[in-house]
Amino acid sequence: MPYINVRGIEHYYEWVKKPSDSLPKPVMVFIHGWAGSARYWQSTANALLDQFDCLLYDLRGFGRSGGKPTIAEASESVAESQFPEATAAAIEKLTYELEEYADDLAALLGKLQLQRVYINAHSMGASIAVLFFNRYPQKVEQGILTCSGIFEYDEKAFAAFHKFGGYVVKFRPKWLGKIPFVDQMFMARFLHRPIPKAERQAFLQDFLEADYDAALGTIFTSVSKVQSEVMPQEFAKLTVPTLLVAGEYDKIIPAEMGRQAAAMNEKVEFAMLPNTAHFPMLEDAPTYLRRVGEFLQIPTKVD
Image 1 (cartoon, helix red, strand yellow):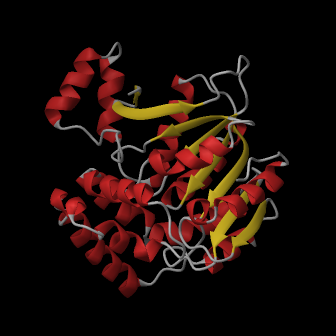
Image 2: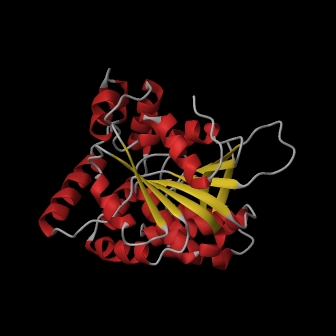
């Protein structure tokens, strides 16, 4: 499996391309959401191969990418680096703030020598993408945000969410994935329409294997008073042409949150997919791809 060292951390990435193509195409980068991995973007990437070379990667601490290393691992990484002082400083300052994940992406693109890309990001990954669009607008052609939005701060609700999220992250026995039908129960809150069993099982496995500190840290940084104040400002100042796709029955990030975010900036186009929830690209792939194709003004392969 291909890995690349980004800011002192080994990141998993993969290219999804047509092997017969001799010339490079525009690049679309996919960013997954909380406790997931690039695996669930695979089918969407495959459907866009006629138009793009697709880059999939796992966020730091999720999927197959490493989390913040232990002292021993950090020391080894520094020892092997050509620039040990810079590597040590980079590892030391890493946090689970979403802005840091945006900087991770910038470093990844730099390592792969990619100058300007399209980005399709989901859920927490979409918040990271918005921050990236505003920090590095010169690197983005167009953006697609799937299941994103802005929310108001509610102290009691946030405290309850963080407490519950802490329990969920702490109690994740690996044997849970072996229980029959647990993947259906686990994904029920995320879906309005069924998705293939393999997709459900992959997401459950990613959740069970996510790095503890990364999973817990991003709960606190992505759903916070700071983010409720920052994200409206970030949406308002976007200059990158952006499509925001919402699922009609999304319980995680309700469609109205997406509608409110899109209304803040004429650069953001809003599309709600009926009869879908938090994974519209999997629940209704033909409609999702058709809407993406219309926004990008490209033909799309719709089965």
